[in-house]
Length: 125
Image (cartoon, rainbow, N blue to C red; front, side):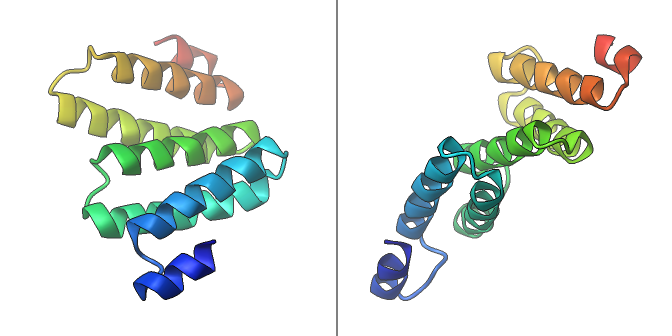
């Protein structure tokens, strides 16, 4: 499906290709293949950034969060923490507040990553 859309649109960096990659990534993850899912999500992130021109877009942020979640679940909390913190900054910038539901969930994700790294005191803050 991805190759067919790439040929149809003349580029791999097209929103329709991104949609197919999202479904492939999700399917791979649900089947327990985090490595393949991560590769698809990372390519999807590249397309999202090219399409939207920024990381401060809902599609791009969603992809970044999926990547962070996989890193956390696969035992790479430092990378997850980096992405969660970036997402928290974006959420605060876009929404103009640190008191939104998105920011609250991202604070929880940051704390989970910090706990996974053994930084209990940082997670409590």
